[in-house]
Amino acid sequence: MAFTLRQLQYFVAVAEQGSVTRAAQNLLISQSSVTEAIKELEGDLGVELFERHPRGLTITYNGHQFLRHATKILADVSDARNVFAETRHSTGGTLNIGVTSLVAGYVLSDLLARYRRACPGVEVSAIEDNGSYLEHLLIGGELDVAVMVISNLRDRMALQAEILETSPYRLWLPIGHPLVSADIISVQDIAREPLIMLTVDEIEENTGKLLSALGARPHVAFRTRSVEAVRSLVATGAGVALLPDLVYRPWSLEGDRIESRDVSGALPVVQVGMVWRKGSSLPQSARDFVGIAEASRSGRVR
Image 1 (cartoon, rainbow, N blue to C red):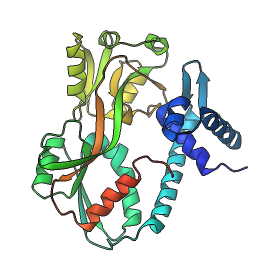
Image 2 (cartoon, one colour):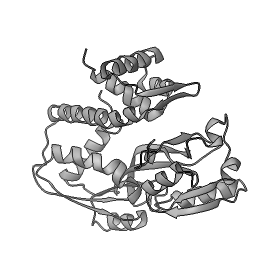
Image 3 (cartoon, one colour):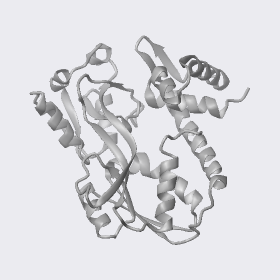
Image 4 (spheres, helix red, strand yellow):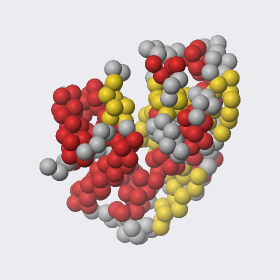
């Protein structure tokens, strides 16, 4: 029997949450329904999508590969529904978008793909820069909308923001690291480890503030603006990283495994959202973009 959209929906939810329990809670269904759907999907595909262990589930390499296909299928179905759900008035025009570097490859690419399918006649122009400069362009009317980290939005009086995704910080570890099997990981544990620091948006600032507030002085082994470099360095044992779950992927470009674990205590979160100038009359092209972003916020078929 071929797999169903519902099975894909449950699979993506488990992969995103890293837990059948959390996935079931988000989907408002029973855990047994999610578990059964995953088993049926694995049986149809003939591969294991998750490794089962006492701490829960870990997505396998095959599961990670299939996740890309599953999310694309669900996105395509959502787009197909939108064609009949509303009539697009935007047959032409322009759309000027800004994006911060952290979210450019993790949020905007999917949104733009959906938008171009829905509004093929709109000419889209996008610019990547830091958050403060994008705020300046939005207030000055040079951008219609920006997709950016809004946790540290500066001019909230002049700008309207809507959250698309909230991502908690988690610890990235190489396979075999002693902390992988620890029941509880504290910030003090992290402070004793060589740290790979990502220096984009507010990530470095948040990590430093967190450790300093708890009296822990980090030993920064490497600073980089590349998320892929962080993945490779962590996977090969050069250090650990404390990063938002938004950018976590279980494999480096070289195919090495990366583990992710919760850290006890009140860690900051990264909020990604859409921002536009408060009180401005958005063109139809921008209103369509905002609508598509809102519809795809959950990333699941309804």
